[in-house]
Image (cartoon, rainbow, N blue to C red):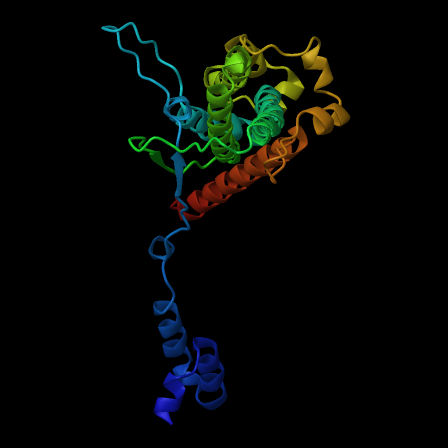
Length: 306
């Protein structure tokens, strides 16, 4: 019988004990608690993505470059720099209802969408060019990668959804550059066209990466901007590099404008509203007052009566 009870779940043991002997109830509950993992023992789900770049241009774009005064090499941000700013500054500020952060975040997302569309269009165009050339030459060309080429392997664990989407952009760009190289090699007369198109799309990606230094998180939230208080003014001053629409401070008072123009398509959680923050502040204040009053009553009860 005892062996059978050991095979039961903690809940089944609890029910069995309560039905047979209430004195065993405490022991069963204690055993169930001991069998529950603590939060720090549960761990968390972490995903690490490994990407392979076959072109050095995209690999360098992905990594960024460090400043080197000896060679005159200036610092250029890599994909991880953008992900860090998104994770630590832009997204937290967006979720607290900062409209400036929302504007920057949506701007980044829109630019990513445009880049993906451009890359797809260019890939279709240059793939068709290469296929047309091969058909005209009777498939007499047989091209293969050089044997000494070494792919660049990168392990990525970006936490922001926008950063992870940029990894997808990099892999698409890598494929595009390979097709462009083939076209440029078999049809040298389009070298200038290849250079122009490639420079344009690389420039678009670098433009997104530069957003890492466009936004500064000051701690201002939706309530601050609704009241247009000193925190909101400081946030506008700290983010003077962000080219906001004219009359932005008035536009953000319109809920429809916020919903239509300042909502991330990557994040499920909606940013906090001024009303929600105000209600939370009021609740915290009421709880603080209640605690203070309770403490005062306790002190009065323990005072000696002379």
